[in-house]
Image 1 (cartoon, one colour):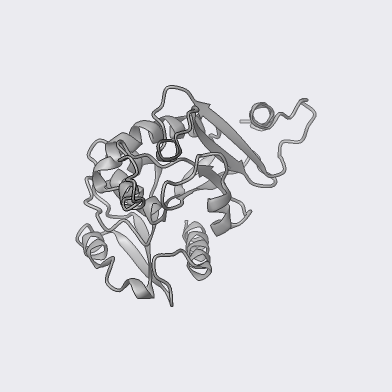
Image 2 (image 1 turned 135 degrees about the vertical axis):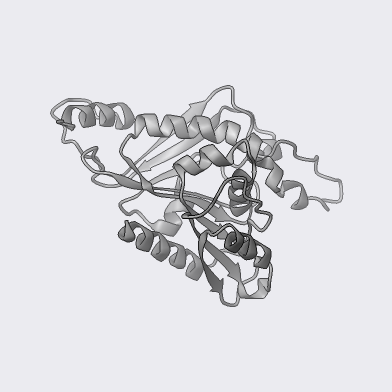
Length: 266
């Protein structure tokens, strides 16, 4: 099957390539989609902003439909991003031969900020019960991504993040409403300084985890590691020396190396 006409059509719609004589590849490009009707992200609830939910896809230099690409979704901590750009994921993996997707963070209910600011951080915490609510949004975004970018290699898909980014990953894996579908899309997970509330609702055998913790965080993630062992998941640990609750440059480099290694092994 000749994929060149399809490739040109896709790249025209995604990247505003205007004519059929354009080559079937592009320079790196970010495309942002809006999703009317989806709930407000946690960032929106925290800031009081109001606009449609967004997700952004990054296509690497030389992107073409004539090959398959890994997919990387990494989410930052606290209230997460707005889904407007893939800068956080690309700060980890670089501008390499990966498709990256940026999505916002979701939490069903966010407490109002107290006058003394004492609940500034605690009200953002994502526990394992948020998976059902978050999946309502992520499922729509992923369906859009896979419809518009059909050449993602499902054997090389990565999801995770730092702090609340790890927590929402654990929540998606813990909810019986989200885990079975979520695991059809992703098989490799990054949990940096978070995700310790994981209670898997679907078998994890064969899925692969990278667990990162700061050396000053002590035994924070021991419960998580025991759970991964009991579910027969494959996992590796990396200790970010001298760090506490942070995602160090060394930690990001380890994630990059791990993702590269998983891709090479396929």
